[in-house]
Amino acid sequence: MSGAPTESRPGEAVPGRVTAAGVPPEDPGGARRAAWPLAVAAVAYNAWVLEFLLPTGLDPRHSYVSELYAADQPFHVLFGVVEVVTALLVAAGAAPLPRRPTSDRRSVAGRWSLVAFAASSVADVVVPMRCAPSVNRACEAVNPWHTATSALAHTALFASMALMVTAAARGTRWPLIRRWGPWVLAAALVTSVCTVGALLGRPGWHGVPQRAHLLLVGAWLALLAASPGSRRIRGKGRHRRAE
Image (cartoon, rainbow, N blue to C red):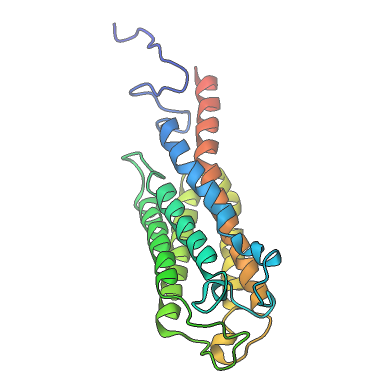
């Protein structure tokens, strides 16, 4: 009979059922697939902290992180590999983010912008700086190809952040992004702007804001990793109250 209750196993979505917010429950498997690569990427994106343990010869206060994998640096393979693996994790975590057919265009565009950010990060490693300008005065501060790929990575990153924050603000999903996303986005923009002094012929202390920027990007990836789980738990709580 149409009015008979439908039994389901724990964690299994029931066709036609919706939460109290008026949206269908999330697919737990999809949420987990999105969460763990982004969580690992949030940590790996800040692998630059290894410079405090390794004899890189670079001063973190006055050097770009990309100098760690410049072609003439002793640990360029290590930091380059970490950068590529991190980018692959970001792409893997971004792909399953919004899986519902009702996902709005902003969240879908934000997902693909995150994939573009990952692709540009790989390109950053493929065309690295030829040398480290903070320790080699003969080295150019602006490497045209590397600067271009870095600019594309930042454009894609900020596009993803803006789109996902807007999508979260307009709906009931992603409470963590809705609450903390605007603050992370604003701080990431400010710290990013503070890193361009060396590119304009005024080097010095640009390493500090850049490393702060990378920590903020890691925080953003952590927010994305936590958001699928937050939606699932929140949805289950509402579902129980609605029964």
